[in-house]
Length: 163
Image (cartoon, rainbow, N blue to C red; front, side, top):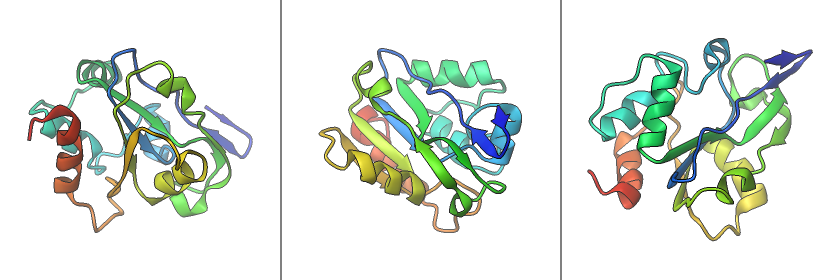
């Protein structure tokens, strides 16, 4: 959904059993086209996350939501609306940040994983003193040459212990 120059992100996906909150920055152009998180085929997010749980990537949005619920993972972005050119985090202007209390007060979140530098930066501005464990993760974006799946696996393992 878009209004004038502002782009609007997505609602959080979570339920009362979510244990890990993964926070991106803002949906890419491809994600906004399909109206769901990590919609770019080259983004490593779904491949990494489903691979951790040894599951196939769901074909549909509902399938992905079901996967997240079954695996007790909440998903949201630090920016709920902004002005942006294309998909580049560097072009985000006039960001309205997410109020994380919506998820934190309604789910037993044990760990927050921040997908990339902008997500981490915005999180630190408002939530650096949060008592929930959090970690800056390498962006799953195809534009990130320093992506390291092992870091993601270790962070997920701290909560789920599968790896």
